[in-house]
Image (cartoon, rainbow, N blue to C red; front, side, top):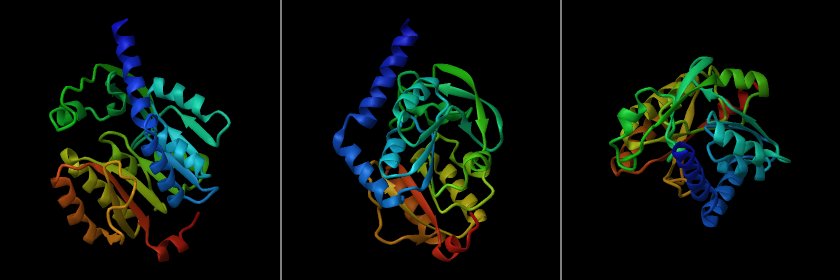
Length: 256
């Protein structure tokens, strides 16, 4: 009973954070409209409470929302009804198979398939007191497998609590636009993501700090220019999302 109560409280908290603040919802929807064209294909990897999936769908995108937590999956199924959102209940990683998902029932958006994540991040600012108190086995697919099923996405958002680089390492082609979460306590993961993107194609980068839903810089930077900017921002303690887009010359010549 206590476990179910904690899970329900955690789900309600997530809904309030991601859907219950109208100014944040409107800012996100406006930002997504600027990112994707109507009819674009978008992957939301780590869809969680579905705020980005919904914003992308309202911008006219076809959305594949991937979320391994059963409670969020059921909620996403209801949200997707009547919309161009296909919900999948897997984790995404370097290989296909099965993963062990560590769940924080009171803070479910912080759940992770990375085995060392609770110990590594638990003492970081903003994570104090988070308890990962449930574990379940979930199916895992690669980004390549999703592309084989749905086609090459125009935009991929990745927010998977420590496994962002693993997701990109399960990808073998350059994509037009990719975003991934960065955390000051885990900047080596962000560096791995940038390394992988540089292996896949020629990218330029920008970032969104926190939940501001606007780019930090008016100009996009090469990876070499961007890395010190990201390190400087992270030293201030601010988390956020990195955005990487193919250089125009390469994007135009890329095969669908």
